[in-house]
Image 1 (tube, rainbow, N blue to C red):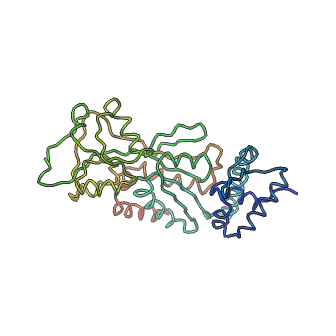
Image 2 (image 1 turned 180 degrees about the horizontal axis):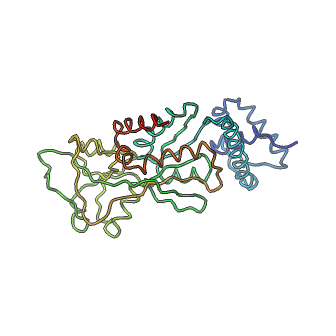
Length: 322
């Protein structure tokens, strides 16, 4: 008797969550059903797949050998389901995305909403993590596509350049703030208290790489896991923050923050789309990628990516053309 698709799904879930109980909850199965499926699978394959330590399960050498094959089989099955949904010419199915913070919180929600206005039968699942975690999820084939702002160098990942963003320095405006203040990388870094993103963030990684030898002069007071937390800290007077212009352009225009010119380095950065090199590109994936690249490449689209109001107006023009 051969292993079933359901057994592979259960195996993957147990690997992901490390416990039978948690895997059962996520799969909406009883704990005994999951345990039985694992036991039958191990019998069929001629040996244990996990080392059991208390309530936790860790892959042994046999399990580690099986895992990539299990991922590949389930990926192919999902691709087959997508192809079957596409046979009538319409776009249907689901896309699983991971995005780093800037893109996941400030760009993709508008893009996804616009895409679904054209293709209402498409369902999206999107997780927001830092670039480091997004890269790992692509390698593990846990998602279809990743959208990141950090550097990715992995032979298993295809990286496509999307569009450019810019990192800016912000401070709170007020009577104690000199409107002519600038920050020269060569001389001024030590003068400020810095509020930065956490280690593993694409924003922090790129900014520190651009500073080069001057990075040691940063007086980092806080490392925070979200751009909105940086904004709140800066607003409270904790120091100056380094954030994506996409995330703060409206607040600068409305006077909530003051932008501090940064001299001595180019703060532009490349935003990218990533996917596993062995991931099949379905019509649905290609359609969504074409939509994303069309908006970022057209002259009207780039500024709209940071303005929901402008973006909605632009999307209406695309919808009308359909």
